[in-house]
Structures are given as structure tokens and as C-alpha cells.
Length: 80
Image (tube, rainbow, N blue to C red):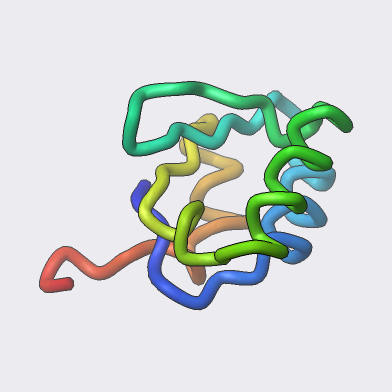
């Protein structure tokens, strides 16, 4: 699921904490980071503080149940 523009990183991290399985953020360059990892959270927060558009183009990878329940509001529309 690709992220739409304007998603708050803190919202993503809070939603990831609610998921039963791991939740991953995949960058445009192909790096995969676990959103439940404190190191990843700190790294992404540092990036967001400098330029939030840097993480906006990424993807959220999780099981389908968690995607539907927790992340559907952050999904980029297919037309975008």
C-alpha cells in the first residue's frame, strides 16, 4: 500500500503499535524498515523533521487484516 501525501509519521507509528504482526515501511529505494523498531522510529522522525515529503512516497507492508483495519485511511488512491 503506497502512502498518500500529508500522512503524519506519529499516526503511522501509533497504528503500527496496534498491529499484531510486524509492520514495515518500504522506501522508494527498496529499503525495508520495521515500524515497530525504536531505531526505525527515531530514524524516520529525524527524516520527517527535515522534510516530511521524503517518506510520503513509501509503502506500508503488513498483513492484509492489519492493512484494512489500521492503514486504509493512509492509502494513496489508484488515480493519484
